[in-house]
Length: 337
Image (cartoon, rainbow, N blue to C red):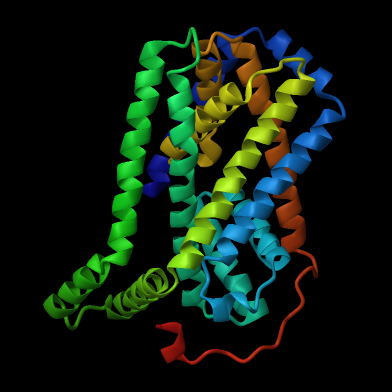
C-alpha cells in the first residue's frame, strides 16, 4: 500500500507546487531571490539556532544517566544526519529515526530501545511546544487588520484539532494504554510470531511512561527548548523578508510562521511537504493582504537552505565526525526505570 500511496502523495505535492508557481508572477519571485544576496547567510545561521534548540530539546528527552553520555553537539550531529535520511529516503521518518538510534548505539553505546524511546518522547515534547507556539499566532490572527475571516477561523480550527490529537498521543504514552493493548494481544495470541516485536514494544512503552513519571522537570525543559526552536524560526522568516525589502511586525511574522508550521504538520504525508509549503505560504500571504509572490519566494529560500542542510547531514554521516565513546552500558533493569 505504501508503494502506491507515496508516489500519489508526491504527485499531489507536485500539483500543489505547480499551482503555487502559476498563481503568482514568477519573475517577481526571481527578483526577490536575487535581492537576498549575502542575507542568506543570516537566514542559514537563524536555522542553525533552530537545529541547536531542537538538539537541546532532544537532550532533555533522555533520562539523566543517559543524557550524561551525550553532548548537545553530539546530538546535533546525530539529528542532522537522521533528518537528512528522513528527507532522501522514501520512508519519511521511518528512514531517519532508526539511523539516529543506530548512531546512538554504535557511537555512544545507548541501547537501540533507549534511542527510539527518546525520539518518541522528543517528538511529543516538540509537538507540545509547537502548540504553545501556535496559540499566540492564532490569537494574533484575529488582531491583524484586513485578514480574511474564513482563513482565520480555519486556522484556529486546525490548531484546536492538532492540539487535541497531540494531547491524546501524550496521554496514550503516560497512562499505560499501550501496555494494556500489548498485554491484551499477548494474552489473546500467546503463540503469535509477532511476540518478539510485542516484547520490544512493551519495553519501549515502559521506558516512555517511566520517563514522564520520574522526570517531569526534564519533560518541561524539553518543551521549553523546543519552543525556543520554533521562535528561532520566526527570526529566520524576519531575515528573509528583511532582505526582500519587506518589514512586518513581530505579530505578523509570528502568525505567518505559526500557520506555516500547522500546514507542514498537516501535510506530513507528503515528502518534505513539497507543494504544501509553497501553496500554503502563497495562501497565507494573500490572506494577510500581502503579495503571493513573497510567500513563494520565502518557501524557495527555505528549500535552498533545506537542501544545503541535507547535504551537511549526508557529509557528516559519511565522515569520521563521530568518534566512539567507551562508557559502561546500563543493565536492562536500569533502562526500564
